[in-house]
Length: 160
Ligand code: PNS
Image (tube, rainbow, N blue to C red):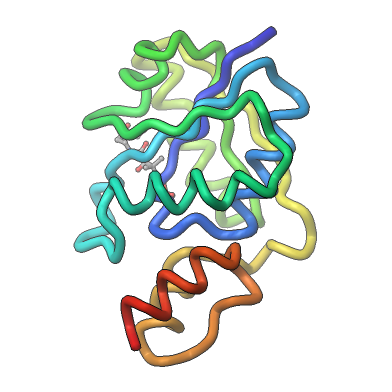
């Protein structure tokens, strides 16, 4: 059974991420959710430890038994090596995601020989994005339709 790495910033985890984790957990033997640094994103809302805790709680109601959560410094391919992942998994919302993910997939394969598998997100989540969730919460809006209940609560605590 394959082990897969699902890398991302997860700041914070949202329902689209959970959908991909649930799909991957049904398809593969083990799913490692890897919190990594995206150099294009500065100044996160939640610390890495907080992100891990939010993912752990969000997964409690998701009926997944084969999922681990870890944070890694540096490259996704190095995280994949550490956990002996056979593939990386990425979720695709739209063609914009495909352009970005295809470039990363080719680069990761070129430097480390690790293939990437894409999973389409469910139609309900094609517009869900951590960036917009952060913005909505920061300006006093309600992002609770896009995040698990514990994340909605944490955002409210943070910005109220
Ligand atoms: O959730 P995000 O921000 O879209 O995830 C992007 C992430 C963290 C997966 C990507 O930035 C990444 O892989 N960062 C680790 C550094 C790395 O491996 N860079 C080379 C990418 S080809």
